[in-house]
Amino acid sequence: MVNSPSSQKSGYQRATVPVKRMIAGVLLGRLLRRVVVSNHVWIVAFHRVDDLAYPNPLTCGITQFEECCELLARTFRVVPLSQQLDRLGREDCGGTLSITFDDGYLDNFEHAAPILERLGLPATFFVATGFIGTDAVAWWDRELPDTPKWMSWDQVRSLHSRGFDIGCHTVNHADLGSLAEKDAERELLESRQRLCRELNTEIDLFAYPYGGPEHMNAENLLIVKNSGLRCSLSCHGGVNAINSDPFSLRRIPINSAGGETAKDIAYHLLRNMAPL
Ligand SMILES: [Zn+2]
Image (tube, rainbow, N blue to C red; front, side, top):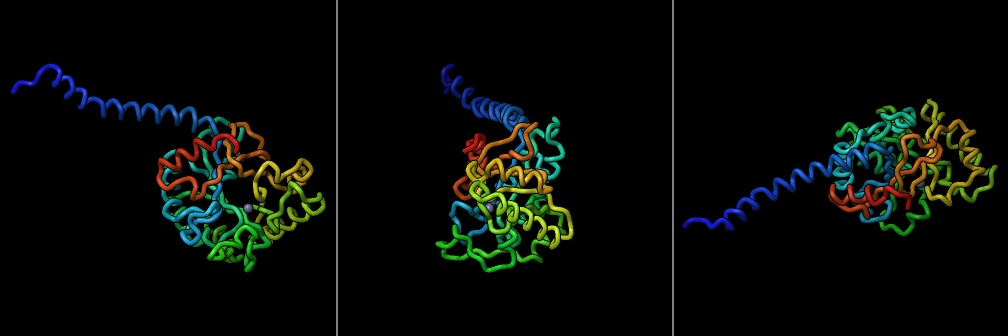
C-alpha cells in the first residue's frame, strides 16, 4: 500500500513534534534559568527531615529531601550562606542558593547532614540554644505522635567540624516581633555567646524565629545589627535581589506540602518567589 500525502504528513508530524517539544523545553529551561534563577539570590529553609512525622508542615520526607537537594544542585550554584553574604551586591551572586535549617532537630544530624555530604552541598543550621541537649518539646510539636528530639551539643560541634555553618536562632525560639527590647537583647546575646563558647568560634549568622514579617520589629532588628550578627533571615517566601540588604533576606520554606517530585519542588520554588 502506498501512503497518501496526508498520511505521510502526519507521520512526519509524529516524528517532529517530540523533537520540537524537546527543543522548546530546553529553550524554555535556559530562559527560565537566565531570567528567574540567575537574576536572584536564593535561600531555602528546612526544619525537619524525617519520615516519622511526614507529612507535616515543618517536615520533609527523607526521599523528598534527597530529590530536592539533587534538583537544587542541578539548577543553582549552591554555596554557603556566608559566601552569599560576601558576594551580595556583586554580579556573581546571582543564581546562587544557600540551604538552611532552623531550630536544631536531631533528624538534621541523622538524616539531612549525610545526604548533604554525599552530594557535596554546604548548609547552615540555625539552632535555638535553649533546645539543644534537652528534652524540651516545642509547643508546635506537642500534638505529634512521635515527639521529635533535639541535637546534643556534641552533634552540633560535629556538624561544625565537618564544615557546616551554625547560626543563631535565639535561646528560646523567641518571637522578636513582640518581645520587649531588653528581653530581645538577652535572647540574642545569650544565644550567640553560648554558640561561640560551645563551638569555640565566632558566630555571625542569624535567622529570626517563626520568620514572618510580624515576628520582627524595627527596634529588635537594630539589636540584631548591634549584636555582631551580619544578617537576618526571614522565612515567609520570596527571593532576593543581587544587592539586597543582608538584614532583610528572604527564604523559601520547603516542607512536605511542596510535593514529592523534582517537578513539584521546582513549581514550589517558582510559586514562592514572591513573599507569602
Ligand atoms: Zn525556628
